[in-house]
Image 1: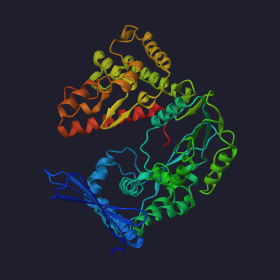
Image 2 (image 1 turned 90 degrees about the horizontal axis):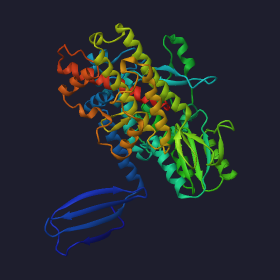
Image 3 (image 1 turned 135 degrees about the vertical axis):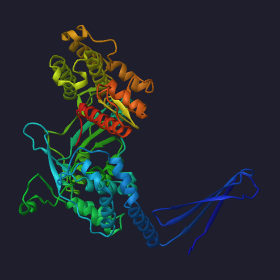
Image 4 (image 1 turned 45 degrees about the vertical axis):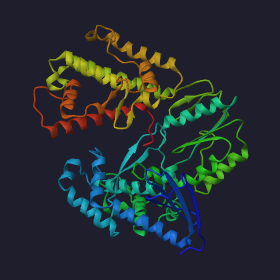
Length: 525
């Protein structure tokens, strides 16, 4: 099997080892290595590394076989059900108008159908449902594709497979970590210059042929490739489109936006571009279609042309002067909702106004409910005290954000990399001022109202203090029930089953977390 053999042994002690554990590695050059580590508990450890060469086609076969195994494992019944449970109760219905409640009744049959049809290559996606999201005045709306629940399961599993095959293309970096990199670079040199642009119609212009050729470089399973191709070519249509008109919605370019696979496919498509640009002596950041480059001197014209050339090879282009800027970082730039210059990191005015509007809307809703008691939940109709408590808790959650599982949500978490503390003091004063016209709170902010300044400190320096709302603490049915009553969400005079408590708690939590994500004011989808 091998034409070359090399043994390298590095024992810690001279006595021979007794027990061992075998690990294997395959390199891209065709070298196959066996790493054997022995430890008998008395003598010590010794590591033996055996290298021998296999034909490259043999390695390709082994990697292909691993992907085949991964594909089959990910689409077995047990994993299909696990993925469905992780998706939870999604509110968006697809073109079939089937929601979570109806899907639950026939889910076992659907899981079997997915398993059989995906593995035998006969699975067909339903048309995606079109959802238009406004991008502002005088701009075409963004087209979001909403799959059916069944298709959402399949797409989520494909995403997991792609993450396993292309781990280097999985972007786990949160937006505020990009800002942390900017701050670090800015502090490392005396003068910083920037080049900022974005890619025109990024998702819509992705060349599917080029994308599939990149996927084929690693994926040899034709059933998986065909499944991905079918998902890409599937059409997105509005409700009530006649069958004869559906063909007019087909397009040859682009990755549908809003699918579980959209982001990872976009990263795979530009992975070689990112690698090429980031090798330069500069800070290169790309978040979806937003590109920012920081350097210690103005970016040379030939480098900008080089960026354009590399993108053109992918059938992509950057915007012209209206969305492309460059200069010294003494000038303010907006990036990922932040306002940045060489002296301070703050928040873009648009995002500040979004947050203030969200706070004001909460007060408006409270005032209407206080004067028109029929607007309240039935059990709070004649209970001003608990109505006020529920309002303050909703307001506090907007101010501090929340934690759930291993994720953090909310405006202050997103903007935790700012250095403009004065802004937070000003915003706290604005929030306090909303109470001046509320007789129900004696025209002043209550003592238990939380503050943005304190929230910022807790996030940065004392994250486990308990100041920030944490859904992880409600870990029993009893605690969840008490919490929901405290938040004014459940009637305290009614008895609820454990199943009902769990369902109501999860519904409440997801609703609150969606609101917090909306408050941020920056979301690509």
